[in-house]
Length: 405
Length: 141
Image (cartoon, rainbow over all chains, first blue to last red; front, side, top):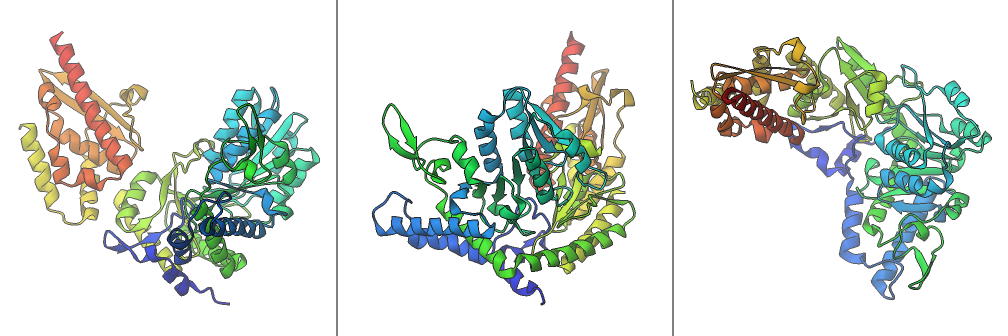
């Protein structure tokens, strides 16, 4: 079946823009994705016709808003194959989800306990755990990676011990594109009773996410990395964990009974959703996941794999290019360096030519130090990118190299 | 030449180019003419903060005239600092401290740079003026 790329591109109004009089080539999807009309319209329609505060009201609009909001929650649960919608907590995004878990896990992490992360983590899945360990006088351990960007599973096996209380790991690396073998890792961790948190920010748009199959204890994702709006994401948590842990923020919605002296808390998932939620955001998230489902994630992955392969081949033709990240399982992220050229110079010239890439440390400074690089140039693809765009990109790369060499 | 006169030269040179790709080419060429900092000054005390690429700057004063030397690991940044040095170097501390930087807007540099690079530009100017002030105080001491 042919991937309907022409139809897809017409679904995204922002793609028809010109940058510096050149057609926009948007290769910065790992930073944020563009939004289809379905998503934009859903949010707009909500504010035009359905807006009301949820769960509290007695009137038509609040009832409609509540119903649609909870339908969105049910849809997210179905999309990631969670057992129940009570395990879906709406948050501001992946960073917020991870901070939530780190914050409520304080009770479980005691002095000399150990928390494990990997060398390829984004700051959002590194700093919360680092700070938690500092606060609780616990130890942070880091699973090494090889030169291709594969996780060293043997090192991980040796690292786990009776003091290990948690593992937090990224599903897909935003720098290397590595897809980590989460199912296998979770199995290894669970043999030692170690719960696993997964940073799924880069995964939702590119590969299938099935939390029952992965058997992870927590999973975080962001709408804006999956063609949805900014400011909304999800924390999935197994019921047994969410029931066990204390609330994160206090206030409206998450309470059951309140006096001046004490408060009883609401059931899941509301226990973790203090304050008026981002209802429009949740509906936008539902719309973007429906858009992905309509195209079929397997087809999307297949299309993006071919695009990545083509881009990698063409880029490798250029003298002096070194691809960073050649893992056995990789997705739509292409990081590279070129000879001595500073990534920042490179990004500046590419922007001039209408090409949007990201340069620098990509919120992964420790990873860059680990790889001994000042930064990389990163092209990251989405379902609306084309091989023609790759050709424009390659021409721009060649021109920039000539100017900067 | 006064700083004003040197600035006007720069504006004239840039106005030859319409296309920003050509202006960047010119900046890169300017970078090749940068009076390079002595290796012994390439350390943490000479690094300008607020730049995404690394920039080292050194200043010396002789007979009331300030001379700047610099280097950067990024080629466009090298061009920018070279441009600033071509205008400010060889002038007195007080001229540098009271210099007018409108010429950067005239060539469109400030508005054309991304916010992070524009910050770097501001940091470079600040540092050069700080050096000038320090050298002036030292000379008058």
